[in-house]
Amino acid sequence: MIELNIEIGKITLNNPTMLAAGIMGSAASSLRRIMSCGAGAVVTKSIGLLSREGHLGPVLAEVPGGYLNALGLPNMGLAFLDELETLSNDDDRKPIIVSLFGNCPDDFVELAETFCQYADALELNLSCPHAQGFGVEVGSDPAAVKAITNSVSKHVDIPVWVKLTPNVTDITVLGQAAEKGGADAVVAINTVKAMAIDVEGARPVLGNVFGGLSGSAIKPIAVKCVYDLYGALTIPVIGVGGISNYEDALEFIMAGARAVQIGSAVARNLSVFEDVAVGIDRYLSTKRLSFEDVVGIAHKSY
Ligand SMILES: Cc1cc2nc3c(=O)[nH]c(=O)nc-3n(C[C@H](O)[C@H](O)[C@H](O)COP(=O)(O)O)c2cc1C
Image (cartoon, rainbow, N blue to C red; front, side, top):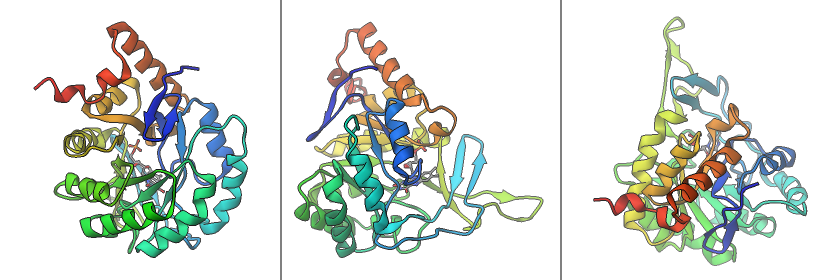
């Protein structure tokens, strides 16, 4: 297994890849499997205070270049604590990032205080595009982003990351709000609002009418967001959106990401984490560059 140690604030990963939030559900066994496949860290499904069933189906559809989903944040609520405790007790585990969602600072603080004992960092999901009252509905308001981030970071002593939405005119305004609120890093991007119509049925494909687009179709949008955030912030940026090989990951790193998360590509290739880490390592040794040399290098070529 490649050792390409990178640091994101207080957290060290043995390579710059992570499982993106929500991709493998909430079972400890699934997250353990991803760790054994070479991911440098895992992000859990987003967890709220109450368990939720999510939206009526269809909740997932394949479209050219990726997937449309409108799961509606199904999750087991506080019962997830048991799964997390099991996972956090593994001797050879990787860093665990717990993703949280809520609709006000108090919700986030309660969740953060509950889950921080078994987490290496928290990722605040202020960006889900298809759950009424949550996600992007709170996360597109810079004042709310700052207030939620500030409340959580005052109550926990582990790093707090904020996951941002691309469904706004200027993502850097949200990134700056997170930074002012005390975030230790930002994660960009969550899915892009999108929909598809079933022409035979003459109706929307998803039960929720619209959802979020993920996969290679959103990669150029995500790279632009990371590039802009790197230029506007001093805290680390973590890139996510459409990564399926090491060249994709390097694009994000050259745009300014210190690490990457991988979601949709896991459906087709469980080895994607190792493939990406090995590819980056080979690229760096061939070009005689360090990881640090490459972070944000695309900003220097203009
Ligand atoms: C089926 C599915 C479920 C997801 N669930 C969550 C979630 O619970 N919380 C979250 O912050 N993002 C969630 N996401 C968004 C991903 O973490 C990621 O930001 C997005 O899919 C873009 O990355 P990708 O193109 O590599 O999939 C989900 C995405 C998919 C496809």
